[in-house]
Amino acid sequence: MNLARQFQYMQHSTERGFHAMNHWKKGTAVLTVAALTAALTAGCGGKGSSNSEETPGASATGTPVKPAAPVPLNVTLTGTGLPPPDADVIKQTLDKKLGIDLTLAPLQTLDDYTKQVRLRISAGNYPDLFQVSYAEMKEYADKGLLLDLTPYYGKELKPAADFVTSLSGELLKKASYNGKMYAIPRNGDAPFDAYWIRKDWLDKLGLKAPTTLDELLAVAKAFTENDPDGNGKKDTYGILGGEFATFASVLGAYGVSNPFAGAFYKQGDKLVNAFYDPNMPLALGAIKTLIDANVVDPEIMTNKSNEIQQKAFQGKGGIVNYPWTGFAKDEFIAQIKTVNPKAEWMTFDAPKGPAGQFDGAFDYDRPGRLLAIPKTLEKDKEKLQKVFDLINYVSSKEGNELVMYGIEGKHYTKQDGKYTLTDLMTKEGGYFSLYQFTGRPNESYLANKFPNQKEVSAYAANAKRIRLLDSSVIPPDGFNKADADRYAKEEMVKFVYGKRPLSEYPAFLKTLEETFKYKLYTDSAEKQLKEQGLLK
Image (tube, rainbow, N blue to C red; front, side, top):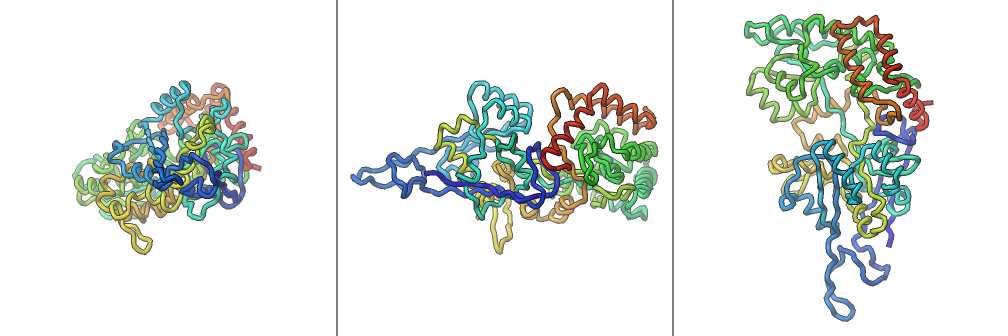
């Protein structure tokens, strides 16, 4: 007996995504999938039902009926921290609820994952549900290896009022190719980056948090030259960071994105690539001014993420762009206080500049993950239905609560809609997010999971940022993005460190076009975005 499902398309006006095919102009689209009924054959007749939810009992002749065996499902994706099955309470709950034997097979690195999945696919040993990039989805769909999900949406899966994962129209399109749905998207995370400054250093030097680029330079100089830590040594820098993300707010003050994090955005109705933005040379000049003033950690182009964090904790600098998850969580606050009990970090708004005030850039419509189903599974109706069962359930209110917070009374308590997490949740709940196949409502989830960080998580999520379009753009054949970015980064470093004059910026663009075919990329991006309705 077939079950229905569908998703709603409401129109949406903005940008983020993972690599899409179509566009809705206003509103949001919510992928709403019904939780499947327990007895698939109840009332529909038919002998030999394999329904694993069937209650054990007796047949018409009095012969005991043996419950159907759990249906094995294999889900493969990237991730870490999964405990063994006998300690995995999420697996155990899903198995019992859905009549499945779920094997979640996370691989730590994307390279390892890609190699392993390609080996499995080449051997015909498909996972039942597996992670793909948009480029992989397109490749596998062209080869006829993926199940076209379009017929199932709107026919076999109904909308459900308790489907809690909100998916924008752009996000759903980024699971589509040639007008067909080939994957199930996970909604993306909220932005986590924030600008941090040492409040205790500001207080000691009689300063306020900078609000303009000139003030940023002045405060950074004071932090570098005026012994803010009081140790009698000139051993601090104003600004810490890693590569060009260090200067995201400086670039934002000129309305420009960090091109190595995302290069496409709109200005009005016009598509702009950061390298071609006329304000880019001006922004690079502002960064050069900071570097020339010796207020920037000279190791920013080689610092790794943990090195940035530790330098900040050790008091090596007073201004840094860093995710709040690595700065404001209770354990990191404890680390900071252990090193320096007087240290007090606070967030501050991005400085204003000629183009306004942007705390960097962010691709709001990028899926957190795409999960595809192999076409071979359409021959196994029972298993395919169980895959849909699984997606439906973790997307429902009850199931999403499970994969966010665990077991009520064990990992959390709830009163008047407010969640209180237990110590056990802190201890063993780190892997729960692996099961959030279609995502979670970010704002409420973060506020509940990190109540002590509620203000800073909301601050980072709501900061004004340039809205990127890169996840809607697939690099065309004949263009090597990695090579182009490698060259561009080398030259941008030269510009900001004075190794190449900014007057040569047009020559840099010419090489980018002639040697690395960058114009092929920008022309293709414009065509793709117009096809999706993101550009007029």
